[in-house]
Amino acid sequence: MTDLMKIDRLLRRPQFLAAAKGVSQARGAVVVQQLDRADGDPTVRLGFTATRKIGGAVVRNRAKRRLREAARLLTPLHGRAGCDYVFIARMGTADRDWDRLLDDVKSALTRLAIPRTASDMGDRAVSPAQISNRAAPDPRPADQDR
Image (cartoon, rainbow, N blue to C red; front, side, top):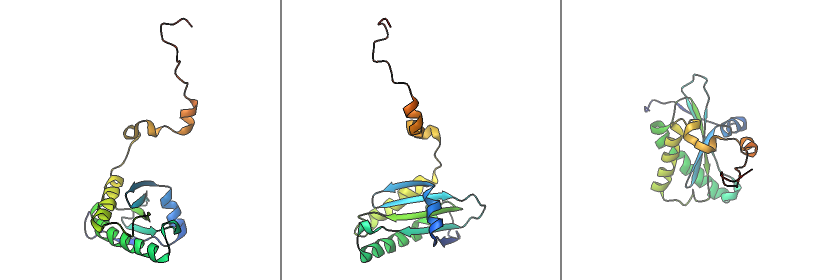
């Protein structure tokens, strides 16, 4: 990517909910959700969130500040144009070593940049409904009379 990539912020709840319907990657102290908008606009939009589960307001704000800085450094290099990204802080985000946090964000962004196909996912591409409809294998040996 280039340094000229235009980056905006996600600010409204419907934007965050839309991104949650995309793909996501969890790495160490961060979860990154990605939604390819497919609207022809090359702008990358970023959102940051932290739940009360990870701590009080001070901890949540510190975690989001760290995620904002990591995203500022790495999204122009590893992000895809025309996508929305939501960075979700996890329990150790506020206290994680800076280099490890950067590695977490980088690996999540690079994994999301590679489009996945059903053949890449193997059995995970099968829906739960398909699994329940599969016939169970017959436990009897093949040479036994039926």
